[in-house]
Length: 606
Image 1: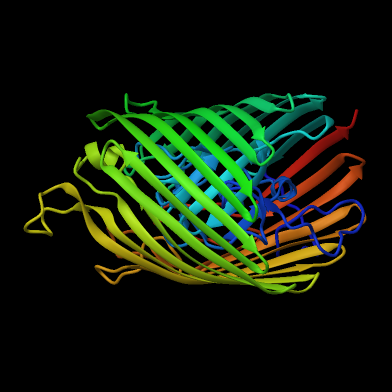
Image 2: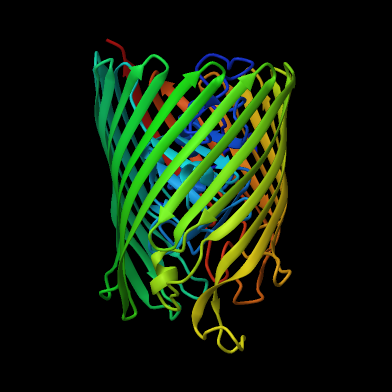
């Protein structure tokens, strides 16, 4: 369906928080963040740079995948090879695309084969909230958390019965539908969400005129029982579908994907000051090429045991982890099947006294592929007064070589982990209930970066082989401002950074030196208007060419109208100015596109 409408008087900003039927309170509650410390802390208490994307923002955005939600937030750069369902990369705070750890309900979903997690296959319809923690978190999570951690939380129901349903259509013959049913009564809770999305898409390559579509079916379910002394929950999330694309010879191809996370979580309180959580999980990430026998597959089983003990002003977190990962691939006739075992222990102390907060964390990971590696973090915070707080931290991180690094083309089983050292200072200031300012400066030095040695460019290293040769440094400054009124909220973020390859002096590819985003919403009666402005400076395309991707600015607009209680009609105009911009050389991005959606939600208490 191709439709044209005029949405007048919209703000150039995307919604940041829920706007209820009544005017918004002058100051929204400080969101609770779990990811930064593995314990519940408000964002103001956390000695890190954090962002929370709420359920209300997710719904109003009408985003098709998680990448569309993330790209409008500070510190996030996106590289994308075309439209919906196409290969994409996320660069958090200027680090590499495989330097961001992504969790789904506490379960690592980064694949063991190559690259970062397949965020392009995660439908936001079943997501409750997203937490973004910028800066290394290897002291708690181990490998991959050099740039930070993104955790995605699926929906959970409140007390009583909640029902929701939504459906929509838009440009490029796009159609989507979702339903959800949750019930919490007494000790029991249960819920299920399901969604489907399909689009004919647009040409992914600039040299091609062939539309390439995308299909995605997602389901999420859980059941839990709270017996007081203990709580147990079983959960499952799964996404399946097909993504069409063209190769570098412009031959039309398609592949099927199947991603899933299954977990059993047991929580107990053996003593008043002691809580313990045992999570057993299984993750699956699989791609299968339909025009050949090529495939990528990761299956990972993990047991994670966490204990939190409060003693006076100290909150101690102590845990252990066992992991077995099986990674397999067949690509252009080259194949491997690799099993990797990991054992880890971690400890953290959060200490509060007066206006001071201190965090110290240490983790040792024993990876059977390269041996042991220890990481740590030390952070200090001070409340200058009731309206301001400063913090400083130093943390180390690492990324273990994946199976493709060790056994794929150019594989080297003797590779060492990539290592990082990050220093950060931050300031948060709330002069009035309506205004919040934050500022963070950071420096991240990364050593032992894995690179493929070109036999024609080097004399001594082994030809055609991965080596730990590169070094990078990312320095940056992030500034955000949130302005909250009775009916509106606006957030501005500005990032200036210098992601540099220290061996060559060149800027790391697909990372902008300057990044601006402006998001906001305004409500009057049953009508809400808003949108988002994103601007980024020029970027290098790749280490393998000298192409400069030009800077760009893109505007998305949205509006929604409450037709009646619990029934809302919404519209989103993507790339409202119809700008032609590039996120990866040779690949298209969406032009102006309109999407219409209607949703129904009912919450009934017992």
